[in-house]
Picture 1 (cartoon, one colour):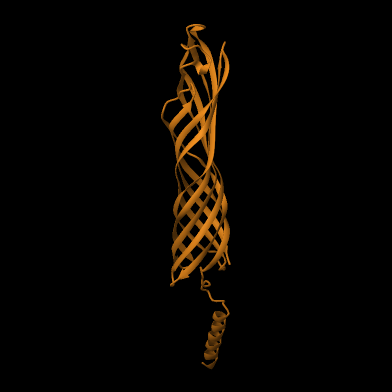
Picture 2: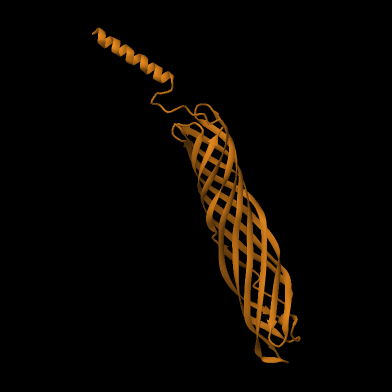
Amino acid sequence: MRRISLALLAATALSGVAVQDGFAAEPPATDWTGFYIGGNLGYNSGTDDVNVTGLAIEDFSLPANGSTSLKPTGFIGGVQAGYNWEFEPHWVVGLEADFQWTGQKNSVTQTATISSASCFGLGSPDCSVTDALGSANVTAKLDWLGTFRGRFGYVVDRMLVYGTGGLAYGHVQHSLAGSMAGAFFDSNSCQGGCPIGASFSASNSAINVGWVLGAGIEGFLPNTNNWIWRVEYLYADLVIDHVTVPFNASANIVGLGTTPESGTFTYDLHFTDQIVRAALSYKF
């Protein structure tokens, strides 16, 4: 009996030393307060609605209104940094900024009839181009995207479930390049119709500003209180923008020559983006 009592006493003492020295089976306590920085990688899929509202080109006519919807997709990656404040036992608030590079891009081809009342200024007063068919390739691209967001979450064990929202801004590019083929009719020199060709192009890039909302879950890696993994979803809306860009064209009419044309092309833009990404951060 005496030997059993001594063994139990020794086991109890060793257990106490293990707990005191941090060798207990329970995971280390977490503290979310502090500054962190890290990197992320993911995939984004967007919708880019372009609505043509105006076209002003001398002797050159397209349909007054037209719209197209592009679906840019691609991989996205970048860096994030922020600061968390933990209050009460389970609540965390924070601020975070991130900057992303992306290859998100999409192109579509549109067709329309093109006309000119004076054969692009090359013909006689009764010269006209009617029902010429034009084809244009429209491209949209998101080069980079940044956000500045607030975060609010609830701690469960060693994980944080949170919502986030704030400001979004991104660099969006659009380009238009196309050609036209048809015939012009002139009672003086080409009563039966003569072939005509034309090319045209326009491009614009701008930084668009809007808002972002999202949610995610993150947690400390095993046996550490510094490395934090994350899985996150964000929805960004870059607000509608009214854009007017230069438009250039060149027409070539058999027997009459070539003429350059220029003007303006106006459209409204609405770009939205959905992002799913994973991240790893180090908390100081």
